Image 1 (cartoon, rainbow over the protein chains, first blue to last red):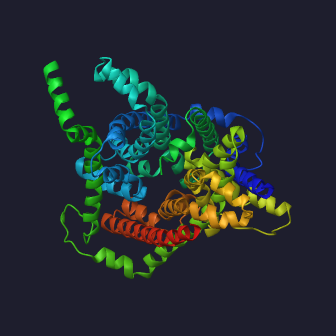
Image 2 (image 1 turned 120 degrees about the vertical axis):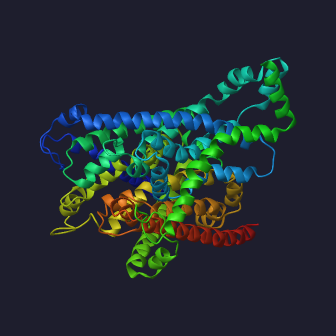
Image 3 (image 1 turned 120 degrees about the horizontal axis):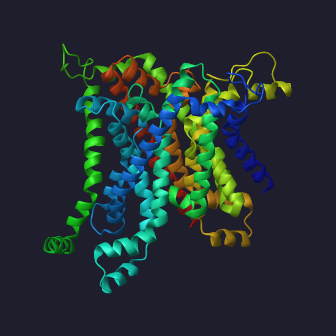
Length: 261
Length: 301
């Protein structure tokens, strides 16, 4: 057990190292990436706020993720109910169908959408990007909500029905409160997936319409990246960790992420 | 108005399938229009002998692209690279994730949160961020080289970026969370009383691990192997940024034909070749393992 513990903590250190290393690198005062940092300043963290292209891409990514997460949760909830509660043949098949987009490599789907959007006139549009993100995030929202619907107490709905509540009242005042944590988890999870997606946006975002990860990718790939990229990376990592801890402490990450396999 | 609602309610109560169809409609329609249709169109594209143009909007269909991919040594080499990367990443990921997942099931409270945060970090933090971190670590005269120098392990210059081991290491890093998630839920499902019974009857730790825990978690291991293989063999970003186009893999060629050289038919054919290959390998692996593990369970009873 001691050996296992040492192994696990080495893995933990290695998992944290690449993310944490962005912090000292961003603290440098010169304009290139170096470790140990040369000089010490917070100028690259402040540079985020004066980099208009970067700020625009942050906003674009934010709204994209919000739109995708809201729609994904709204359309996935009824599906979760039908699959969890329904008693009809072909339920397992429908479940596989809804979670199907997870099985396709994103690069294949991205290429398919690139050609398809060109045909139907959605190429390089924000709407096209939202749709693309919806297709790949709905399976995750669906599975998260499936877990949550499964844990609901059906007797409460019957009681509400018997006591004369309308279906809408039952839904709003009996079912939604029970689903609250699941809905929040599904929203945060789809938001993160959409905000972090690179491959789809790389193919589909138009010229001058880059999302944040694509902007970061381009600056890294083309070269000549300044320490503003490690700075924004560290900020993103912090936000990610905070969201994770909130999610884990409120609803339990394993229960929701692993689904019911 | 209430009459209409009443009628709908009545219809739903009598034929629940009607309600189910209505509730599923948005998602199913969306999947048909924006998932199935694009893939069907892509398949059609993959059969065209050349890129559609204004002068030639409907080039004839043929299997030329596929024949080209499966006969040209250039593409075979790229395919071999992709598969090798997929296999190596899968083995490394499982070897690391299994003990970690086992440890996670044995602890609770803040230690569990800490280890979970670390091991699931790549899901919550943008993949570009972790690739950037590795890039900084692996740079010539970067952190890893400085450590190796100070330990006296290497002398002279050392090429870490753009090598196969570095690529596999970063891909392993990215896919550990997926394996850990599946393995934790699989390990948690092991009935603890059976383990206790085995221990009481005098079974040692190795025996418990190899005859009970491993066979019982085989479905989880197979599921995570399939997921990690499918994801890593088709990964695009890490080969671009860490392999720096030096190690050619299928997704790099797909991107290059799809967006830079604008040869969609060839890009589409490569995409489908990759898809079919990955599906065939994972399906074959799953059915073989299914048979093997069922025999394992038989032995346990």
